[in-house]
Length: 622
Image (spheres, rainbow, N blue to C red):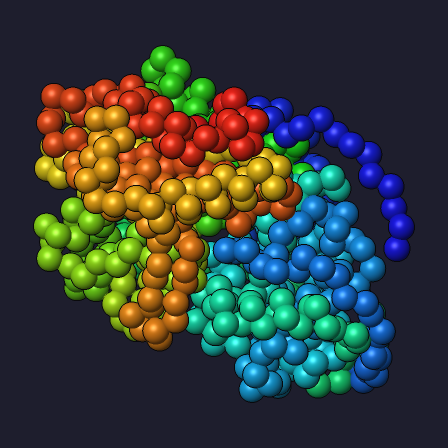
């Protein structure tokens, strides 16, 4: 396969297109792009039922037998998965058999009983190349003996929804077509990952086997069947193989209604004196936002912005942070801005929470949800099993676990490490500083879940407030938390798309430095408690993850952490995490960048980042 690529300007902050759910021109384009939205834009839910062939959206075909071809192929280097699957540029995946190799290698790596005559789920975030990829995956699955594939209409299913559908339908696993928060389009990113039967990302024991098989693969099993029409809900049969196209939203909404008190949240969002806004960033949660926030919870239709899923995310970067969610930040920091703002990312598993002129760090967010969950969220009324965070995330959650006398776990970056703890009944609420928050209702982080959790807390605090009374705000909740637990000042510096060679040399330099470090060493005004490369032994299955991040931990509890990210598609992303605990309430209103400046300067000095990477400034500061 050959093709040409037209280079585009670099992706910048998400400001090129801003729409509301009632934008007429955008609605027309959305309906052309995603047929399952061909009804009033205020509701993205497909109303058709696959139990009735009289529905205009229902499709059923007669059984057709098929043959299987063995397609010769050559292996490709570099198909090793990162923390969340395989991510590369679209043009890489468009090489002949590149995606097919990885999918066949997956089937070659799984025990046959994990898929033979089984049920798999398939969905994605709607980005460019998903529709073509879905057809490839369906044909390889059929050839390898899968009995049935459930596909979200038009290939749409958010990452949390895939996990939810796997669990509800008792599927053997599922494919997620997404590069998460990375930009989309012909010149940008695409990704694929596999989740197991409890909805969790495949463990390293499987992803390592997949990689090994990609290096030696020589043939692909391919079913000789036509492309399946994914635009309509319904069933297509090829012999004993079934493809069922399902409503991408229904199962997820049903789950959210079982977790949260929707009437409580509606009592907040339907108030005339409360203003809410949600920025879907032209990503997959645009399909979920109106059905949940508007139809179910009473928010105004115009509260949904950038609510149209687009293959290129409206030329934006669908990463909900202060840099790329600039539209939302400007709205929330404007004079007399809304009371509550939130955003989600490309595949719907990340979130950002804002109050009026107030940003909630992800580290604080998960801690505050945990501290308030039992009283505000019905799902947790009978108690919380345990709490966990990724190692780079601030220690705020640790303090909640200590106060509530709950089991606590510190794990490497990657949601799969939480899944084992959840399946063992040890964990209820967890989070990562990279805007990922979730619970054991599924086995993925969940952006809309986090927004609903925050709305539940605010609604619970204001449940007895009468019109005209001052409402408890997002900032009130956060500052009350700081007063009780202390504030963990936290910041992350991202240096995206660094030259891999320089970034790797920096890490090797740091590893050499920590090997020579000892307790009591001084770094400016800070005294070292220990320095290491984070090592994790899973308490459930005994599996080991090493070299998970270089830590400098000081005697006052301050931390500096260095990691190379595994979620990008090109070059290396260097991440530096800086944290300092402050118990003094009088200092809690300091800007984090001011409070942390001495530690930030020390972090840059220790790493010699400029010398190794040539980078003067970070791409993103959180």
